[in-house]
Image 1 (cartoon, rainbow, N blue to C red):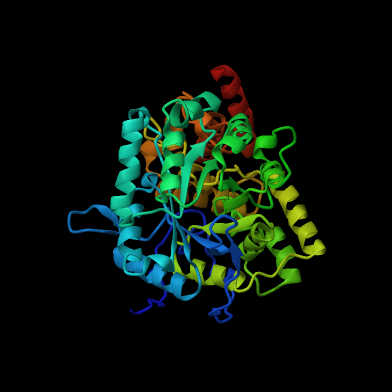
Image 2: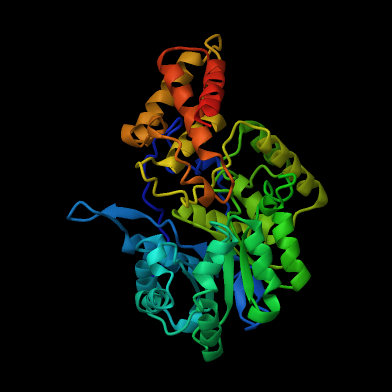
Length: 463
């Protein structure tokens, strides 16, 4: 079987500084050879399987337009990426019914390999009330077997525990008997490891872990990166150190998601990037974030959504083998985290759990455009700035290219239906109103600061 090692096709991502991908910059990737047979592995304490510390997150694969004009995942491109990943030691692949066509293309691609060549994770994505009954949830579960072309799952997750609060979690997974069903499936061997992914209300996290003696969680998937480690004050549910610490108390292994904080840690500000380049000029900013996540002793695998070959190769370098962080390097990351938390960036990870918006807004892309402009120093501050006109044009032109007008922040009515779904606790409607005010002021050549004042006034008026 041939291994597709060619570079992935490039696309233009509109925004303040168009590049192949919003989190890619050629200067930030190492040019070193991609190692073979050097992947770092961790041992699953339950099955004793050797798990690649770099896991393949299968949520965002390359797409193409078919003959009907429909946007579909590119099976050939997916095959090339998965072939390259397996050839370089990656054996953990993570998908879900909620990821659109992902289970189908992953199933086709992995079925070309012997079943013992890879470890497969999928999820119970019963978000819609129509899937909350035991029978409907079982239907989703059995359909995943068909789509993925397997007769057992190595890792099976209750998807998005905590979203909507504790009672919502109980309704989806406990009151309907679903966890009891999955425990029997684990006994039968159709599920090798049972766990859950956490997003949202920490009360649900605490409750599920309190039931560990009953459910015997084999693993838990948490968000962990150096910005989220311990920087959220009293909101312990957003501190990765708390989430990790609770697993540590119970010796539960962790699957790590969002190590790049939605790509933000792959494209740092020039100041933060300079701090890292001073220490290791040849390392990508993403590699630092992956080293932080992989350093944790209970990290079984660190997920990365590798859409392009450049992503895949850079991450393989980082984990082949993983070089632990020194005390000085950890302190540098803490300094960068403090800078980021006090910046103007909106802490959106592009998880898209706020979607779909009932009014058709593209919330993640609105925030992504704004954050790109902050990072690229193309957020106009004052008409007195020397680059004001250039920044103003870049912001407005890039906004229209990134987000269709009917999906922009100006159409947000403040219904807040999206806010309980946001794992980061972002006040989405307030931020949308702020971006809308900024946009309107730039169109009219008004001072930047007045956008803040107008947004504050609009927020209080709305409340």
